[in-house]
Amino acid sequence: MTKTEFELVKLLTENKEEIVSRDRIVEKIWGWDASDNLLDSTIKKIRQKLGKEKIKTVRGIGYILKI
Image (cartoon, rainbow, N blue to C red; front, top):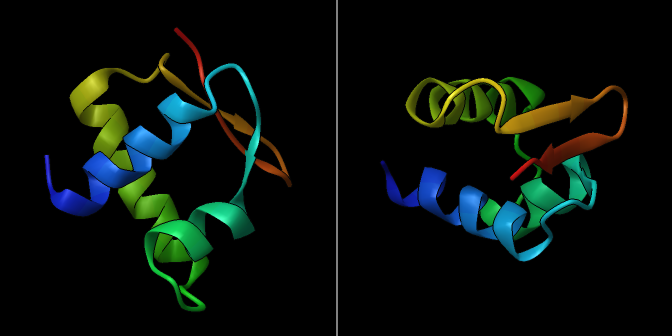
């Protein structure tokens, strides 16, 4: 797992069972106005490593870690 992927999983873990907005994730992980594609591709890579069922998309809002 890359450092960025780890930091994103850590952020979701710290807020487990809570929706974390896309804007908050981008701000905390990249600290600049990252593209939606960058976030989406990072989430996709994490899902491939952890399993699709672990991170759920809340359409139009963000993501939630299901444990």
